[in-house]
Amino acid sequence: MAGGCTGNVGCGSVNNNTRFKMTTTETWNSGPNKCAQWRGTTTTTYKCTQNDLAPGGLRGGNSVDVDAFTYNYNDFFWNNNKIKKGQWIRIPGGGNVYCKATLSETYPRCD
Image 1 (tube, rainbow, N blue to C red):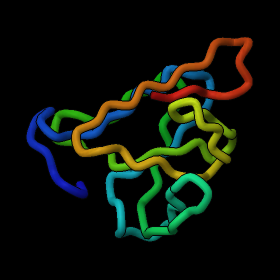
Image 2: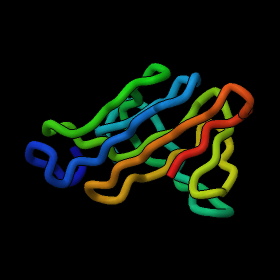
Image 3: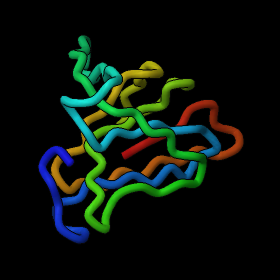
Image 4: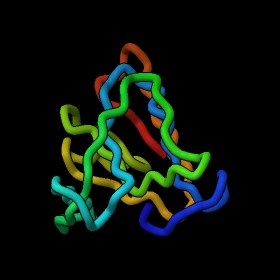
């Protein structure tokens, strides 16, 4: 938990309503893995602990604070910006991210 949360208050969460495997972290800036945060034209790499989230999966809330997410195996869209696979999007404190992809879409779309 980067900022911590209680119950659902201040907890970041993700809804992976796609057919693609998502990866999340609840330990931004600590852990054995590396997460390259997308910053427009550049990235900054931080330590993290990566956890896979299956297609259709939910993570966050109930005192679980998701700090960031990516798709390690597929490019994806974040607020209409195409993001390269493996680049991480930070979730603002207590934010909720919803990702979707119809069967005809090649890439997940997240807001």
